[in-house]
Image (cartoon, rainbow, N blue to C red):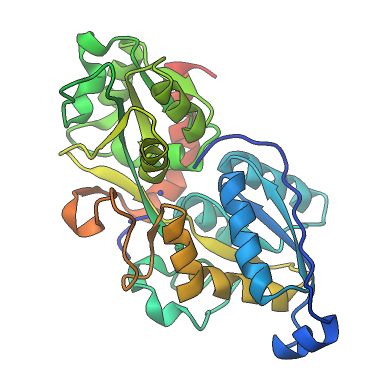
Length: 339
């Protein structure tokens, strides 16, 4: 079994994007091997990042019209499941938070096996054995701290259960966020944390919001002192001037890789494969780094302010166990915190 170094963001409405090339369609399609048509892209990435990803892709493939549906991982998957029940899955490509989600899609025969030419540049740990999905970046969940209120932050998860922080912390819900669901699965299986940690969070009046974006906003605005947030969002807010500091707790942090996969029933396989290739390519990975993510390709440097995976302790748990217990974990979380 491969190491599961595999880790969402906030709710925004459906996003519809399209792009048209300025060159002649026939000339560009010959240049790009006849790649054109419409591509349905379902994702949990922030809308501004989706926009820039599609813009980058369309510079290379101007004759592909990309239509993107964006929401939290759980809602994106819920949409696909509803389409499956109706007998018409519209998505061509999906990119959401974590590998556990893709394992479920794989079991349901919803994914197309595709060994991208770019996989040779991706560490084996982040590639599915059957080439159903591949990690696209590395994101750790950290403590985002409001530096206006907290002058000497404690580098441990236990600060969230301290009476001094009662009612002063926020986290995203695993019922909406794929990253949060992954965090709950991994952290509840650590000897030094386990489910007692979440019981203590409830006793300490932890606020639960929908996604990482909402959690970050609460910390950046000063409504809360601490938040469990994916590192790239916290770093982005810090660089934009918010009073935010990133803390990688010494006990370790969960890490996701936001995998990408092609849906089995894709109506535009050629464009879907080109889109996956672009995301994993050197060009696509540099775009990812410019947006503030730690790229999956090791030859491309992570943005300043993010710790490398080699310099932090990673909290992990067997993928098969996380997959089998995902719904049970969410139900247990719901019993502790409510809906």
